[in-house]
Image 1 (tube, one colour):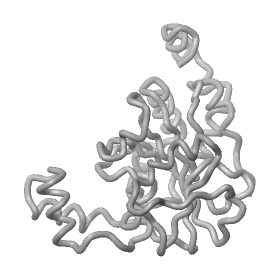
Image 2 (cartoon, rainbow, N blue to C red; image 1 turned 90 degrees about the horizontal axis):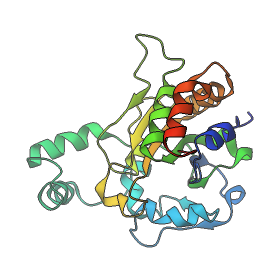
Image 3 (cartoon, rainbow, N blue to C red; image 1 turned 60 degrees about the vertical axis):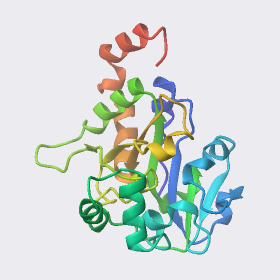
Image 4 (cartoon, one colour; image 1 turned 90 degrees about the vertical axis):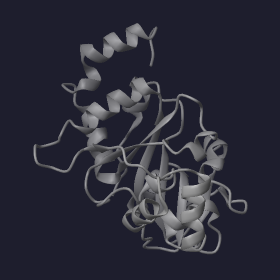
Length: 239
């Protein structure tokens, strides 16, 4: 399957950061140049490497801090994890609430031995699971409208904003990666130091990515109307 073209979205919204794909693939070589996590470093410590065209390579043996949410392996023993997240990070009022959230959070189940996080590789589209746009609030608002363009009443919500770690927001927060849906992310304080202060994440499943590219190609859509032109003018010519 051919990757749809996101360049109209990138151009019209003046998106300057690379679109970052999460790939679940049998062979990492097509994603070179590859980098590996350094110890238990955050997945998003690789942001400058993504900007340089490099791809973070994660396996069950070398996974950094993203092992639990992206691979379902590693991590601290459960009592230690609950204590750390509750007592040190202050993420829930009690150990019970923290434990209940961990029970419900789930994790991504890889199909292959290699997870790759980095710039889009059109030739590897069959292995793409999600795409993340790193955007400012104006750009985010337009993408949220675009994600609703094909939405029918009664369908699952097109945009969600779930609590979770930055790496968990790359895939684990979606109930069904084969459904068109987007998640507002980069709301994890622990990973934000790797981003620009105004950057938020808009992570989309592959079906939603296809819908957004179709929305961008439709001259009747909100990407090509007066509302957006007025916003761009108010911002001095670009978002």
